View 1 (spheres, rainbow, N blue to C red):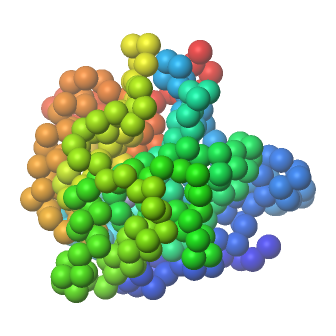
View 2: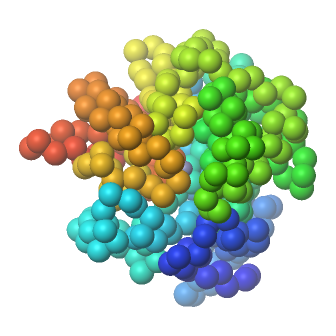
Length: 330
Ligand SMILES: [Zn+2]
């Protein structure tokens, strides 16, 4: 088993230069299923299992999956100094020498009729990622059984897995992406003016549009199927969207990059380096955090610790993330 660096995100290395083959099987080495290559337990080598988490939302089963993780250097959070971000991480017992750990969570939504995947992960283009295919294998879901993929925005960590070996990786799926993102990320002028670390996303966006003739550009909030609808969360990118899953009086909102670990939701004037329009990103969080807190909305967030399920709660005047209790809740 290859020894992978624990510092996949060494300080200052542009994101676009990382990845490719960083996922070599040890992230979630093997799985619960021996047929998939689980490593027998030996002393000093704990068994790794593929993390999966399932909740019920009315008639829907929502399964949290993860493509892996990357550590984001403390310098990647404009609005706060690296020392302030590190201090916040220390206070939350999550400080790592290599930065703030970002998970890359995806969500599979099933109702017996439809199989909808929300986001596709970075697929090895960032950090220790590329585990989504294995997670789907463990679930027994084949890529050609996915009816639809909703991509919350066209950053590489949300769409990398749409393509494998230069080919469409979800051949039967309708692909849903907000039109504002499709327009932005396929615009050569925008690409030319963008920093190096966003070039991978621009390149991937071109490939995705070319390889997915069933791409449906989304204009505004709408249903995808009954009970699954788009929520406009413009700000992180122009066409950043969330997905609301609602049935039988229960609901879950997948908010994608609305909330980042350590820095959110305690403040809205702190950003991630990928955010090109900070005023818009702040407006998104100023609008949504209080709303989510008032509603007590159950949230799924891409980069929060697995399975990314929680709530934004107001606690003595401060917003904080409250992890949701998801197991054995029936
Ligand atoms: Zn992201």
